[in-house]
Amino acid sequence: MTLKGHKNIVYCLAFNNPFGDRIATGSFDKTAKIWDASSGECMTTLKGHQGEVVCLTFDPHANLLATGAMDNTAKLWDVETGKEYVTLRGHEAEVVSLNFSAEGDRIITGSFDATAKIWDIRTGQSVNTLDEHTGELSNAMFDFTADYVATCSLDRTCKLWDPRQPRSVFTYLGHSDEVFDIAFNSTGTKLASVSADGTGRVYNVVDNST
Image (tube, rainbow, N blue to C red):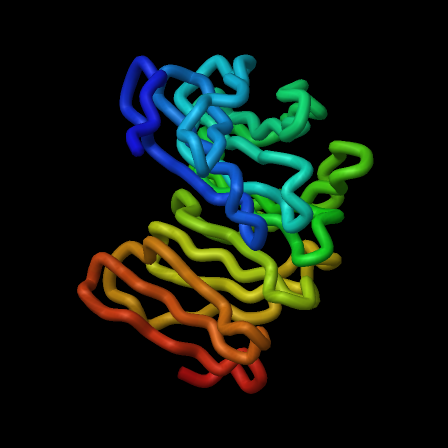
């Protein structure tokens, strides 16, 4: 099937895994859309951002959709009704990554303002700002237990954090160019990163070795 309806570049998408019956898309037309994965029908169009939508993700229960945009905000939407639940304000540049904790009670946003913010979903308030990088962030995420957070940046580093603390636990060095993405393994014992230097690196989170 083809999902038609956006009026500009479609930049990001996500399934509502593990259910897989909905697809969300985000566009430079400043909207996100939720589609029926079986029929391709557009179920709702989410309007409210004042800038291009560049990242989105469903919460683990598939009840909420989070969107991040070039208007420096993230928004949470009710998937069933299409209503805006809350706007997360506080970043000073575009929000380029969004990741929920496994329980779905927190979300972390990464921004080109070189910070990541952790938010309480119930209140919509920021509970911690991770501010040590010297360049724009490219991703920020929880490990499976949410005991740790990892961030990566165009400053060529990755950092490991305790999400309850303002200072990082460890900084991973070694890349000679911008770091574009990171991923934890399923148990959170390893962290992988990829860079514009043409390499990937794998770190042991337990002892912070490479």
